[in-house]
Image 1 (cartoon, rainbow, N blue to C red):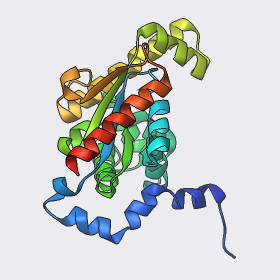
Image 2 (cartoon, one colour; image 1 turned 135 degrees about the vertical axis):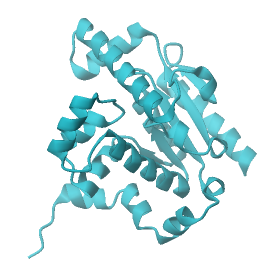
Image 3 (cartoon, rainbow, N blue to C red; image 1 turned 90 degrees about the horizontal axis):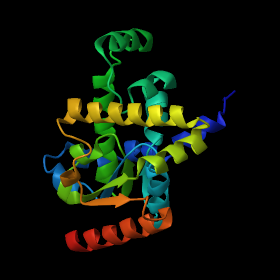
Length: 235
């Protein structure tokens, strides 16, 4: 008797598994001229509460590109069997030495922040070699060849971000502000430790969009138009 688990079957049909199972993609990854085989892609960085994931989803739908955001966590959980709570503990976060030891012991030998980053790096390269993918966060801007994709940073005023976090997570204003500060700090330290860059440096991105001045649809339009210019230039 075969056991069918709908959630797992759905994941097995996802884009990630399509990429992993594609023999052609594996052959491309094995070659030395990988930078010339990557893209096009969109690497979207975001401040906490600036609606980056929502915009990424809108862009992916408009372009009919694949989206890689929380799907990364889903794939890591199923492919490596690591509890989701532990994956989220190191996803775009920096752990101190004591937390790292605890996480490693609970998750099993070999699981750590560095191991997770290495696995994510391989996944991002795999996705980008397939092309036409929108990647949210995870240092994609610093992993993938810059001339093969577009890098965008989504920002917003603090009051805007506080309102978003309060609405989405049911927090009061004080809790929302603390959550934003801590999450931004974790992401900044993660990028600094693993890629030796400052995530908030505007010079690192092709385009910076302030959604305090634009609607999410207008932001989406701007990104889609920019990607159109980029893909025509590199075609």
